[in-house]
Length: 373
Image (cartoon, rainbow, N blue to C red; front, side, top):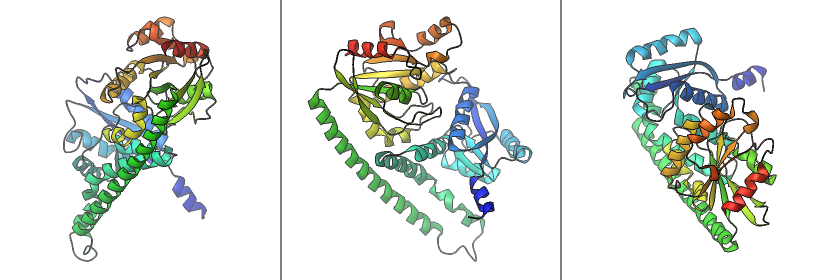
């Protein structure tokens, strides 16, 4: 391979992050925290983030997401910082995305497409890959019209006869057929999973499922407890595919410990729908181990996000233990830790502090699970 071509392929996209600070936001997230998370997602996807840009609005513009004045500022910034990709902090409507690409003349990606891209990189199992592909096709379908807009700009004539609308209809039909095929394959996986669940039920082994925000330390915990060799990295969505391992408790009884995909703020409904088969593992659990990263400056907001997703999945009434993780990294006073814990829905009887990475108090956690069961 020529050296020049190799360097071109490895060149990172220079991205600017764009968000709206909604007045009286109900979810408690500041624009700084939200863009910081978008930054981490962008880095995980392989972008070189060269700037951040935000505007205060009561709601995003239905035409351009930003107001026209701010949009012009964003256009002007392209010359000074040289970005070639704009990553938006919300899911854009097809019309918004089309208008932004026409105005900015760069690649425009929204939060949903960014998360789907990371999921596509992370999925390892056949089931995970099917789920991601389904979500990607469902995301693409309403945006197909924009893929052929370059033909309109050519104004007809030589080189434009042929595809046009007929090609668009062909693409739509192909994608709808692919979506139908993927749903059937995922349904087949779900039936296989149901048979596996029934077998587990007959064995009467309790199921303990790990839930929590992405990067809270779930994979590190399952590795420490079960020597599971699950990829545990300090980055978002390092684990996508469910992992189940047998674990012996201090009273001699066995449980099955299951790790599932981490949650995140503004988790796209497409992801939840596509990963429904995987998330069904949580409905079968006897106990949820809710892992909290105590070192995150947004621990309380993250907790509220997880709580909302559990409610949406109708799992908020499921018995749970709250596991405050990464205590080895706590720098502040114990009072600050208690203040965070007080803002997380739990009671002292159902809360325990640990360090999964250092192995601190894991015996206490096992004892707590045994008592809980």
